Image (tube, rainbow over all chains, first blue to last red; front, top):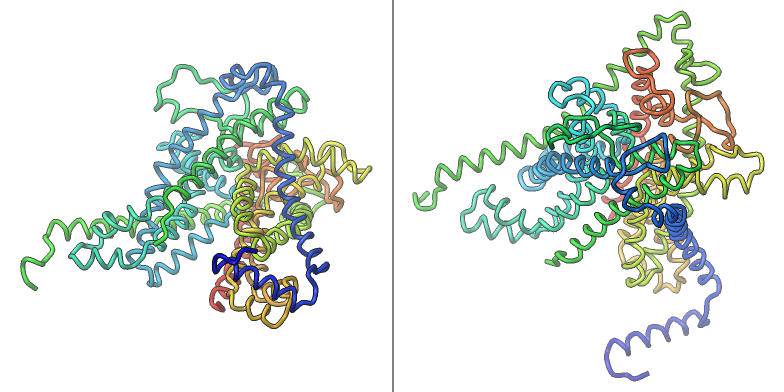
Length: 314
Length: 308
């Protein structure tokens, strides 16, 4: 070994010392433990691989046969040959839009209050406990909330079983995630940035708006994209709120009409197709799963890219 | 104070307004909690008081099975079904999740970690409907029926449990890994310095040191498994109702499965009848169970943070 740098000398020495001290250069028992641990990790990766390969293989005939027709076709639980996913894709995007507009400002504002205005107070402590508890509530319970409140109690405002009501339900579901990830991003902003701004006479609001939020923006954005991905994959809450699983007529409606009309979403389309006993629907189910998975993974990839691209070490 | 330094009235006013807006947003999270608990409690109470007025009274809560359309609401059937699914899910998720966590925290080189962590995040990001499909398309026919020849060909609680378990792996792995990595590095160095092998350090020093965080991970995973809906709704197969039964090799009914059937599945009973209102009663029970588990897990994590 060329003893050219301190690092290589150190590395070589520690390895030699370990071998010398343990009396063996190869420890069988430790290697077996390590192999067992590697196997558990490999099993999880294998499951992921099998899942993706199965989805692609099952849906392959459909993708070679009628890809455009499937992507632009309508929800159809009667005939697998003409079943499509366009309404699902559109519904999911509209739900994400409502979630974005509602949960993002509310969640960020709540986190700012917790971290910047009252981080040590008893109110903040209780709010944190409350948010953590909300994060653990099963998604179907949020569906009950949506059904009782957003569909029935304020149905005059939301229009009943509509995209708007579904979006509000999903917004409530991901709000705690937005709060928690934003809080983490805010906590990562170093104190001197705030002190410097206060020192030249900025008010609390100016410190938050001009210094803390811009510095924490990448982290907040990452968390928001992740929470949107979560919302896009949820089926149970919007099914309870009343997403359509059967024939859905959407003609030439304006955007507002669609927002307050009956709706469906990608996960609901998959559920609807998966329930059909007819084997012909298996292809459509797998293909719809591929579409949803691509959508969700794209969002996750965007979040990971944002994190790596703008991650700053202070 | 010198007048030059004093903050202008406009700036003070916007500062105060911003503060109130942020505070309102924080208060709003309590509104959601109150609405959830209020909705569940009021409607569950409505269900119970109406049930008490039926000929069978509250006795319908213990019957031969869960058949809401026939007025039989045996809650035990649902709880046992949920426990079976959760138990199977934990059998899958605990070894795989904990093993992955220990490997990533104690053995993996940083480079490998950088590549494997995003893969675990992908597994965490898979929508549960997709796993529901996977459970009926692959897990049941290729695994469950192959292992147990007497298993039901189409739907089994076991396939649903394995599907739920796969969804639980990344949760357990990530919380447990956080706990393991929070154990101070000095403990590893001290252990190695005393001549312990890496496996000895891992199992006698690091895991005992992180035990409350690991238990918290398991409890959190269990809570998620109990609340998981779509896999069970697709793969457990009990449609309108189910008899009380204990075998995981047959279709069965769980709490979330029953809620799915009532709310949007094959047994959809919309409107103001008693069967539909039982949805809120089961929902309240589910909420209370997951709340207690989450609270316990949260307390353990907090205690863990205080130690180090």
